[in-house]
Length: 98
Image 1: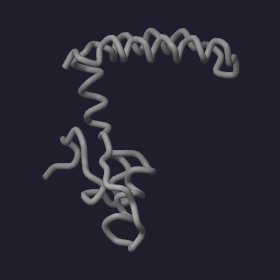
Image 2: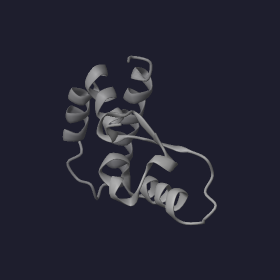
Image 3: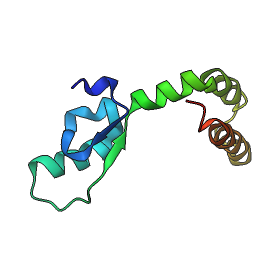
């Protein structure tokens, strides 16, 4: 299996070194599931590949660039909330596009 081309990976398939595919928390949960006797709920992680695929196939990658360009001051919490809301709404509109 090529982890870098999967849309999701089950926790038991993950190790700490897989942080590039699924971010830190998910890779840590995978490490605990597979290698340490720590009870972890059964679950999975959506991969970075799935995220990039969705944004590219839905056209959101271009829209996202435009929306993020509006974020001229990350210290302005009102502006940050408005831009984040636009991004969330755009994602929800496209969620069935792929």
